[in-house]
Image 1 (cartoon, one colour):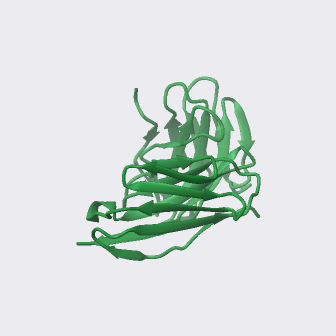
Image 2 (image 1 turned 180 degrees about the vertical axis):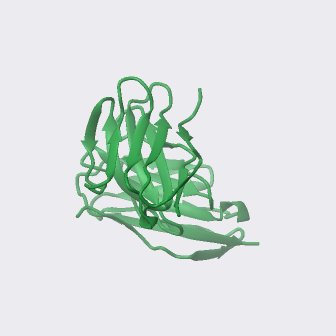
Image 3 (image 1 turned 90 degrees about the vertical axis):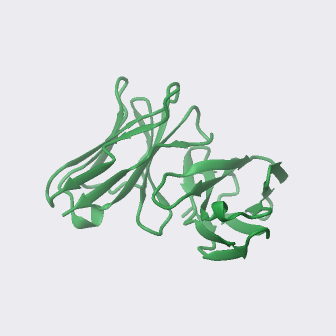
Length: 110
Length: 113
């Protein structure tokens, strides 16, 4: 069974801190990795994509990928209360299906 | 450019009835995915379709559930003889190519009485 796993949380950080979200996946052949944010009652929205090993930065967000360890993470710097949401890791499986982790609920406290 | 359109937003059915959920992908997108989500849970993959073809339906129950994406018109997720356990949010997403980022619709909340 190919899977995407995340710590379900909840993860609570104070405003201004760095939030670190982690994800592991089981399919060694996966090439595309994504982070989505989902506010309560809303649909997921893409915030980051990463395809190569290393770091990719976009504003306050940094995605990190390590294919050897089958690990992808998302760092949120200077966390804001508006970042409070569920963060979903998505991995492309067999170059076909897009599979999601269960999500990590993040709360940023003012 | 309109986003992914799903309708209805809310659908109420009694046990034993049929539910039809519609999804119109973004213009130019030929790949459609359906996911199911229960409260406080992640997205569970159901089916992946390209125009007129089902690519992977491994996440969809073999009985009562079917999906299509015809050459013309929206993708349809059909649930026959609904049961209370079918109550969930059903999200559709589209992409311009496989292995590419997904754009989600607003979802259909199905409630089975």
